[in-house]
Amino acid sequence: MTEIRPCHAVQIAENIWWVGAIDWSLRDFHGYSTPRGTTYNSYLLIGEDRKILIDTVKAPYFDEMMHRISSVIDPSEIDIIVSNHSEMDHTGSLVRTVEAIKPERVLASAMGKKHIAAQLGWDGAEVVKSGDTLDAGGMTLHFMETRMLHWPDSMVTWVPERRVLFSQDITGLHLATRALWADENPSDIVRYELAKYYANIVMPYSALVLRFLDQAEAAGITPEVVANDHGPIFRGDYVAKVLTWYREWALKKPTRRVVIPYATMWGSTEKMARAAAEGVANAGCEPKVMALANGITHRSDVAERVLEAGGLMVGTPTLNNHMFPVIADVLMYLKGLKPRNMVGAAFGSYGWSGEGVPHVGEFLEGMGVEVVDTLNVRFVPGEEDLAAAYELGYRVGQRIQELIGS
Image: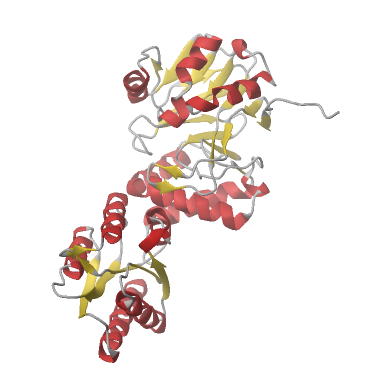
């Protein structure tokens, strides 16, 4: 008979274990679609003098985390809990964990202490700040605050003796998998989910990403393992890849990709989107046409495409004197993510009023997009209208080529 075994820890370095939980069912993360689920990563460090838990897990997964810890040590042996990030998917089980294991101390940033108290009604955390260290015996924890990456409380923990960086949510990705290491998963899926995470979570703070990367380098932080709080973790060559991708994404230089999200009621705006894509392609750029109605494409997937794009052309019909609702949803979402260095245009079809396209054009300008032009067509576009849509796409592509070449 096969032995039934509880959840087990996975060793990621000498005396360091992953003791997190896998959420196979998560499909939405506050408006960001997560069709591949996620993990909540927690880590156990066993020093010669102290045993330390870094981050806990979302409340429903407390038992899974405790089973994993128990596969290595009795949880009551843990001396200290470090909270790198106070968001509830990492602190939801914190109070229950404290009650169960009774650690000597719980450490968090100053804002982390405030957030934990406000969210959980527990004010027992002690404050650590950038430059503070903790000697666990054979391993030293170095704390670095990373405010607004991606919450005001956020910090990372660096263990130089093992060259492990606990990066909390900074380098996360939503991917539920029992293959703990990124290199044990399909590389295209890992990169896609990492880019999608950056676009939907980290992109608004790109300037701070660059500062963090520079500060980490100046501080001599050269990790062999980057242990994040979501998804598979990174080792070996993947570490350099991730750091390179993050710097590229943070710089957000224009590329030849042009994202063309659109909605259509009777197919007219769709015809214009297809014509505009041909113009983009013949200008030497890469169109990505994305239909939005009826749940075909999620707003967070548009954000992932925009991350590595130089152009954004948005197509909308007019409905009740406004842009189509799904277009308003996507644009409001993108505005909050603050994509930079974009060239764009607005286009679409209307029946009798036609406010949708001008509204989109104004919104794009408010986002800081360089709007080349707008194109508003009444009812079904004819050959001349489709030629104008083609020309609009071509002009957007040309402008991107000018910017890349300059």
